Length: 383
Image (tube, rainbow, N blue to C red; front, top):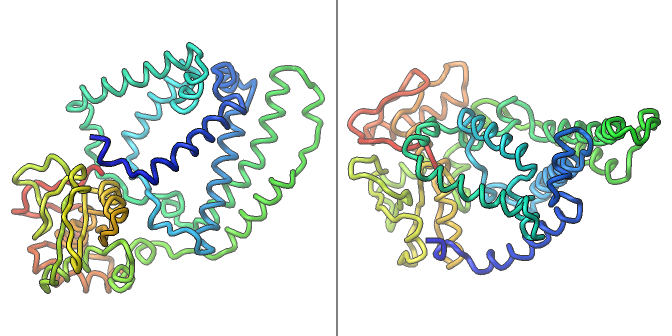
């Protein structure tokens, strides 16, 4: 079932990118289990320096590419956040990382060079993946918590993305040189290393400057004004549509509107947006689209719908993704929350929502969650 998801241009581009990535990891020594074991023993911080440098480079690159209009962040996939399952996964991953002294990426590099450490780790990776799939009926309950869509440090902390970037960049510029001193002290190779003054390299100076400029580039709105878009803003998006806009289209019987639910394995009583047809992701490449149609794709989150959009876009088919998927439809149409009267932006949004919600049989809620009667089984837990 992988072949229909393979997009030739993107797949071919991934080959040189993957080769370059693997060659870089091998070049800096991350294909060696000894290097990673020394990291865990605080004797060699190559892993920390490589990963921290990559994070800062990618973070600054994406931020400024977006600011300069070179990159549309709406087209960048963002995984959902689910704290409890991810904490459990982090503990398991960390335990495996410590035992093997290799992560999946470095294990692939190590295996490619023929080392037994890498081959054994890759075998364990496949065995663990198979075991997880066999036990998913029990383990899956860990993921049955409402995930946070598009959660970021900036939104969680209520500060601008630029300030978060500046903080992380500054931390990296402090931690990386300090790690060299710690490693030298642990190895007792250079007792005088602790007395060597910290120097700012040209690349570090550039990173610091870009991070400082990011922090000064303007603070994004917080609260409801930051997390909720108006109908006009959503309608102007080229590849996304707001739940309120879709509801308006359905109520007004927009000509040639076609709503597609790309979730797989739906039961007959699972809730679907009115008028939607079930076309799972693996059948999207064979979708028969017609000129003039307005195709709206949705799933529980943004992941599957975004993949479907990519497959259709590669064929030249115009489609849009329901922003935040079923979660947005539930929160805005089926069970909109009555806002705090002091939040004027949220009140204006709710006034727009109230009429449409009533038309679809929704019921406003005053709490953190609400149950909408007679809607069937509602699925919003996964992508």
